[in-house]
Length: 132
Image (tube, rainbow, N blue to C red):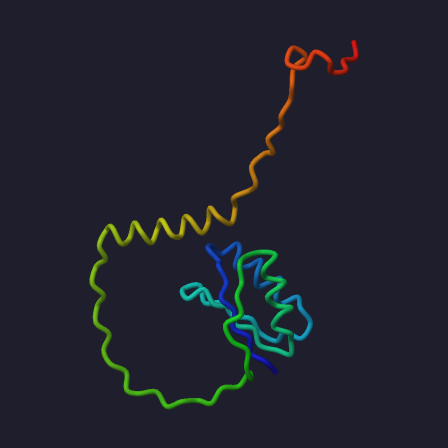
């Protein structure tokens, strides 16, 4: 049993569902979990980490972060402290975050531009072959 942690660029739930379906179709996968906040996917099972990354690279950008045993030793958690309310973000910072998300989305859906075709008219090349 191996635990594979991958960093994936998933920007919405539709791509998340496709990625989870693609990875769960690999033989030997026992569980798949995705953390959208940290953009990490965890796959547990007897699978090859490279095979999982290749399946995901057809859909989105994926990097292997770690590969290790599936069972982790449980650590004693320290006492939980009270969470302080978060300070409001500056509007410029919110705009910068939104711009980064949009750029990631745009880069994934961007297609190659149409090829540039060059043509010559009969006036430019009078010796060219013309079928009348």
